Image 1 (spheres, rainbow, N blue to C red):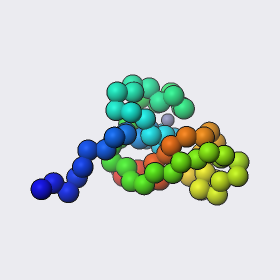
Image 2 (cartoon, helix red, strand yellow):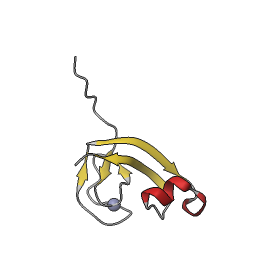
Image 3 (tube, rainbow, N blue to C red):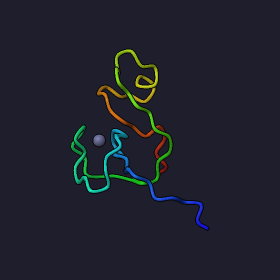
Image 4 (cartoon, rainbow, N blue to C red):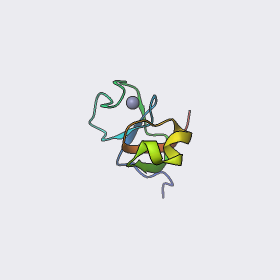
Length: 70
Ligand SMILES: [Zn+2]
């Protein structure tokens, strides 16, 4: 039994936005570099009022990875 399960999203390595695996370009920052090595999901609805968004440096609403393994 594998401990690793296939994730439904991949994370932009630049801005941490989570996108579908078939996405080729990050709609947030335009980066084409993604990773499946990420952990935790932060759903940011209002970046201006979110402490998590401030910590992660997120300025646009969306679904983000909390941690990207490198
Ligand atoms: Zn991005």
